Structures are given as C-alpha cells and as structure tokens.
Length: 273
Image (cartoon, rainbow, N blue to C red; front, side, top):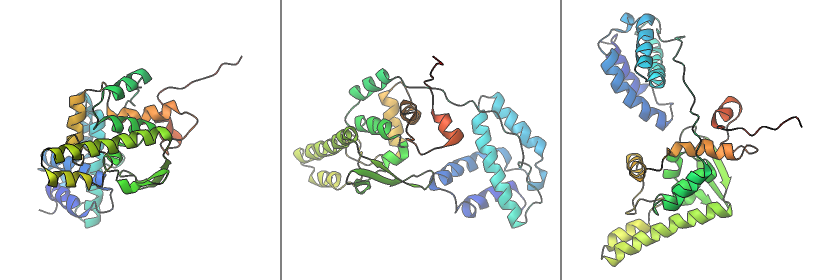
C-alpha cells in the first residue's frame, strides 16, 4: 500500500505541505483530488517519464497547458516526498520539460476602469479602486483589516509570499477607504432601522475593511460570485498589471527582473530624435 501513488498523494497532503504557504496548500489539496483520479491506481515505480509527458501533452491538446504544468509540479513534489520516505527510487517528473505558457497581455483601458468604478455598487467600488491604486492582490484586499491601516500607511503580510509590505495611503486611497467605512456604517444603520440590533452590532465590530452588501466579511467564493454578477468586463487580477503598467517609473508590486516585465503590459518608448 505504501508504494501506491494513492497513498503517496494522501500522505503528502497530510504531512508534506507544512512549509508551504496557506494559499499553496489550498491549491494543492484541490489538485491532489484530481491527481488521485488520474494516477491513483498506479504504483509509484510504475509511472514512467513517458506517462508524465503524455499527460502534459494531453493537457496541452485540451487547452489546459498551464493547468497541466501546475499539476505536474504538484506530482513532482509528491514524488520528492515519497523519495524521502523510501517508497520509490526516482522521480519521473524531475527534469520534465513543461508546456509552453503564453503570458497574459490584457490591458484594462483607463476609460473602462473609471466607468466600472463609477457604476460599481458600494460594496465593490472601493475594492476596485484600492485594488488598482495599490496593486494589491484580491486575497490581500479581502482579508485587509482595520488594524492594517496604521496612520498614513497600509501594513500587511502578503498571503502568497509571506512578505511584510507597507504602502502609503495617498489622498485618493483615503477617499476610497472612507467609502468602504461609509458602506459598513450604512449597512449597520439599515440593520438597526429594521430592528436587527444584533446584526447591526456584528457589522460595526467587523475587523475587515471591505464588507459585503449585508455587512459580512468577504469569502473567496462570495467575492468571485459578486464579481461575476457585476460583469466588470475584465478580471480583478487585471488590476495588478494595470497598476504597474500605468506607473513604469515606480515599483508598485515589489517585483524585479522578468517578473516585473511580465506585469508591464505596455511600454512607452522614445525615439532617437
């Protein structure tokens, strides 16, 4: 039983991910269930590099090249874990050439962004605006708490990298943070006017900056559903590269090198004369 891929995946999910970031662990748990379906019936030593390459080719041919790369990385981690446990002698995924990924090139036009912010409901408008102005990830915005607003700056630890960041609160950002606070107060007042005093108190005691239409903390699925219903015309994640592209002389996202270039969707070039 120990030499089965089924056991190796479950053991890795249970004991092998403790050093990974919470967001990566969540992603890997979902990936693990899919890999149980694809490879769970194999013994560890049965899986050969040719099987791995065929899987990647199949994912590429079904328009899931990037997903295939992520799943291959997960399986490689499973095999490295199994190697450490003495359950197998080699990792068939190691050194495997991954599918070519096409970097996203979508750029949100400024007119489109302004129109979207203007028509957004009170619970989404500050999210879009602060997301663009700061370049913060959606998860970090959703989990941003009032205690992260320290004087004239925002302090938080990135959910993806674990790095501590701080950004100044410009007058424009302050305007939209105030709009988020006004939304929370309005929702609490509505609950109170309808006699729901307990609910009103819960809304006022919420530690989060951005709240839902009813004054709850945003969940990942709840925010995704709200954004889908709103139909902005672009994905929320498009705001990060727009923030960096619109400020080429500033490092908005904290990236360097190729990763910074990846988030720059348009370049303004000069001429000789």
